Image (tube, rainbow, N blue to C red; front, side, top):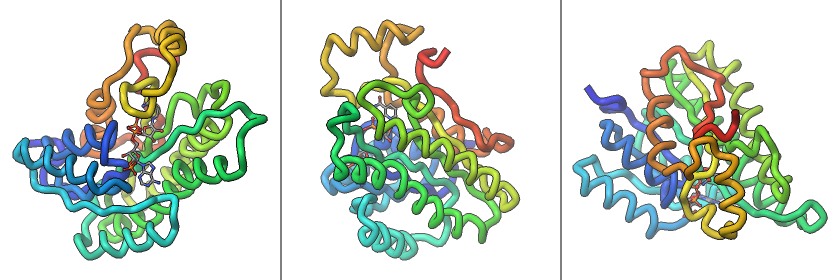
Length: 248
Ligand SMILES: NC(=O)c1ccc[n+]([C@@H]2O[C@H](COP(=O)([O-])OP(=O)(O)OC[C@H]3O[C@@H](n4cnc5c(N)ncnc54)[C@H](OP(=O)(O)O)[C@@H]3O)[C@@H](O)[C@H]2O)c1
């Protein structure tokens, strides 16, 4: 029996990186998927890869999660596809590094809307469906930066610390309804998000990772799938570091 056999799940930010790796792993584990991101091309490519591996072709929804009306349309579309939602992976996120004196209000709002506000709104939507079934699992993607902070990442750090707070509060609130809420806090993962980090900074980061290598999106995806599945049936409100020992 596969980990997510016949489960229906939605993954945001599934057009590349950790979200795409999660879609592929969840499909391998038997899930049927609804994938969300802004890039139709990226989503089509993820869906194509799932199908190529023998998975059920995912539904795709093009949506800017930072835009409330786009998000509402996406919820309606999702309702049209399914009344069942066994798991949600809240993964869409952006990084906009800037030292504190240089952050514009526009940047602050962009990061908070994408990384935190939408995540809460999507949890609300999912929780309503999951409450009806009295079961479900929500996995939010936080970051090691939400715990440790980092220079140049005041807003990103605030958004990810917010994800951790939202995860713990939602876990308390939704446990009586049979819904588990956990978060994964990746360290430094080799995706396009970190592509622009200068080599010298990457060397410095490697020095702080006890396993002395970057993580791969697939290594985060596997943990997300365990948290989405019944293999973690007695786990809620947890923030699980996937960071090669960076947070030790
Ligand atoms: N890579 C790391 O080292 C690392 C470390 C800690 C935490 N994380 C977190 O892991 C998550 C995934 O990151 P990643 O490394 O896979 O980054 P990535 O390769 O840049 O992927 C980000 C994903 O989020 C989607 N997204 C961004 N803004 C969106 C919006 N407004 N509406 C809908 N979708 C949006 C992107 O799709 P579109 O552009 O197509 O919309 C893309 O699919 C993020 O939450 C990130 O903060 C990453």
